[in-house]
Length: 421
Image 1 (cartoon, rainbow, N blue to C red):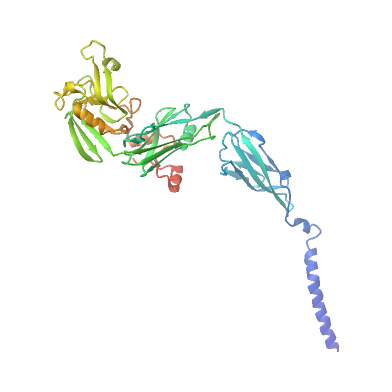
Image 2 (cartoon, one colour):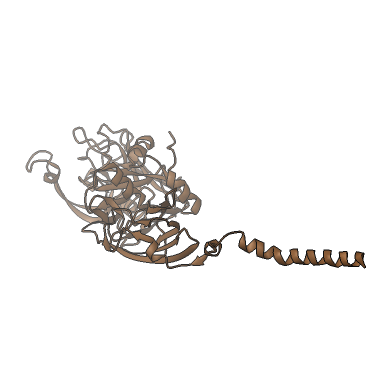
C-alpha cells in the first residue's frame, strides 16, 4: 500500500507540473507581455511627409517617423506605376527620394511603419509636382516625311528648343536620347553647339538597316527651371551603300554600290581659285532643274567668272552651292581638265544617271583636289571628316553607345563604353 500511495503521489506531482508549466510560461513575462504581441494600428499618425498638394519637383520627397516609431517600408510611384528610387536612413527614422521627380506629375506614397510597441500599419499619401514653366523639346532629323529611306552616310540630328550649356544638363539631355538600329552599331553623340547634336556610327550605317531615334525627358529636371517637354520619335531606313568618289586629279567619278564598282564617269571639278573641297560629303537634296548665279557664291555680276545658268539634274552636297550636276557646256574638258567654279560637272546623260541612282544621305567624297577640307558642320554634313576619337570627345558623357536596343545594351549604355582609339 505504501508503495502504491507513493506511486500515485508521484504521478500527481508530475501532473501538477504539467498543469503548472503553461501558467509559469504565461506569467514569466510580467503584466506587459500581452502588449508586445504584434497588432495592426493606423500608421497615419506615426509619420509626417514633406509634400502636400503642389510640390517642387526639384526637391526630394521625404517621410519622417514620429518619436518612438520607425519606418519599415516606403515606395513612391508615378501614374505609370514606375517607382522612384529612394533611401531609408540607417536608424529607419526617415526616408527620401533619390530618383528624379517629374514636373506636373501625380505621385502616390505607400508607407509602412512600426510604433515601437508592437503596432504596425500602413498608410498612403498623394501629392502632385508643380508643372514646369520652361520646357525643352527636340526637333529630330532627318525629316522622314518622304520615303524615310536614306543613304548610309546620313547622320541623325537633334535641334533643341533652347540652348543647354551646363555640362550636367547636357548629360541629362544626352541620356534622354535613345538610338536603336538593326543591325546594331557602335555610335556616339556630338554637341555641335549649345542647341544642336549629331549622332553617327563609328563607320557608315549598314546597308538596308532600320533606325529609330527617340527623345524622352518628359517632366524630368534638366537644370534649374528647365524640364523635359513632349517626347519625340523618328524612324527611318537606309538603302544600299552608295559611295561616289570624285578624283579631281584624274578627272573621274567612280560609283560603287555595296562595294561593287558600277560606273566610271568623266568629270570636271573646280578650276584654280575655285578648287572643289576635299573630303567626305553627304547628299543633301536633289533638284531636276535649278538656276545657278555667280552672285550667290560671291562672284560679281559682269566679271569674267560670272554666270547665270539653268542647270539640270543637280545633286546638292553643300549648302553653299556645291553640286554634282549636268554641265553640257564643258563636255570637252570632262575627263581632261578642271574648269568649273567648284561643282562636279558631267554630261547631261551621266548627270541624269547619277541623279536617278543616288538619294539623300549617300556619300560623295572628293580626293586629290587643291581645295580646302570640307567643313565638319554648318555647310552640310561633313561629320565623317571628324576622326572617331575626336568625335567621341564631344559627347557630354564622354563615351560611345551600342544601338542594339536590348536590356544588355541598356545596362551597357548606362555606364557608356570606352572609345576605341
